[in-house]
Length: 182
Length: 182
Image (tube, rainbow over all chains, first blue to last red; front, side):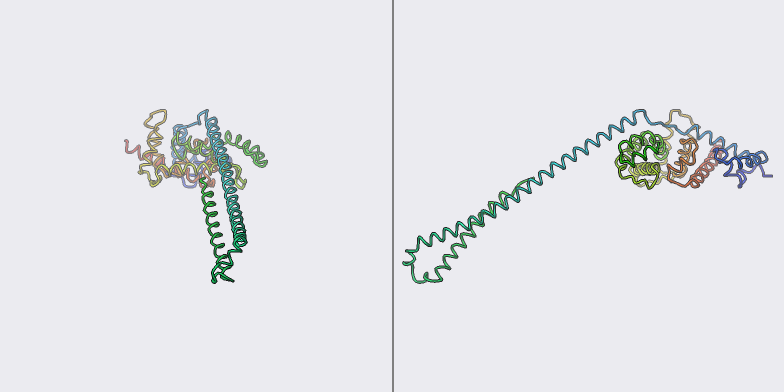
């Protein structure tokens, strides 16, 4: 038989002794281990020592329980989170609406600038045609270099200059309108 | 209980499911947090945080893992993040580390200032972290291997082995302590 002065159980029974103490050993194996314990002082001593440690751990480890208001506080936290999420959603929706409005204004402004340009070019052309008609008599008195194609080049240049000026003015006006701060 | 939760989840009634999840799991999540964090206040905060995360993630729960396994995984991650936040560079497995000293001090602040009890808790704090967690949880869960395995996300055999090694080492340490005291 085993020497009781040695520390530690028989290797074959060590895990079984632990499971026996934990109440997790199968019933058929329990009988075998109990028979061995009756016959082996070394395993008996070790099992006793293990049982003492087991009892101390069970008694001395702090048994903490959640406070009674745990669920109430959790619910309050979740409600606050939900409210914050809802506020964030509302803010996001308002921001989206604002962005859409700004974009709509930008598009409207671009359209307006385009129309302005067309109107100004048309007005310039009409003015040039009217000027040509009104100045028809005076044309006869103009010096020689302004007769023939040169006259039309001069009038075309004048018209282009007016159109460019109109475009520049309209673009400047449009750019100023576009400067919308979010 | 889980069947009712599963029914609500399957029907997309996440709020109703969550109302059942909290009472069903709060105590076990708290005990798991206690075994990892070893402080009541920190464990309580981690439990709250765990359920806030569960609440946020529940609509995305796909049922591939059991609900309990999923919740305990969230709880473990929450606790580990808390540990990392506290002392990011200190190893818990080092018994001489400042964290181990801190843990030993915090666990000793129980209701009774019993030197014997403090001594056992001090010895427990010298074990590697995974063994400490297994031992604490095992006794908090009324000696259930299965509960410890589920909550720590480990196979049953690993849990038995951890518990066995931890308690065997505690017996050796206690013996050494007694010899020193004598």
